Length: 182
Image (cartoon, rainbow, N blue to C red; front, side, top):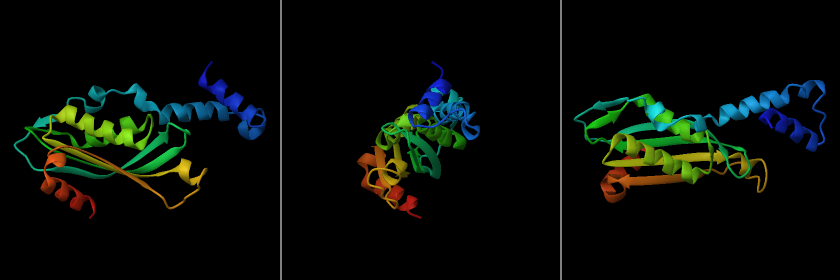
């Protein structure tokens, strides 16, 4: 059954009339929106990075801050919205700047929990760059907590993954954490 038909059935189950003027095209629009919001399933790490690795003698931290992200909670299919902070320590190669954001988007555009999203981004950056260390921190607000359930409007969740030098070297970790607080 096509996705559009499922949305039609959902509207009926909610007690709505999918034939009324305002809802006539809603199943088609909702199906198209869901396919867009979950487009990360149609992407691969190789496609997203597209070979954008460049030789570099830089061995200092590379940090991309405040990468906005939009994802859907796999438990309720409700959005969570936030920002990712992604850093790595190059080991002879740097990744094209936009590719870091594209990696964040690819994994965010899948049904997720934030903890797994954070890990997937860190592992992907590590895999692609062979970095000496990778750090990812995500802070997000979850509509499943804000719109339903406990209805806490000012809550946010922070998750982090530290690999290599960021995990093993307290000074590197401290430098990263101080840079993302600015």
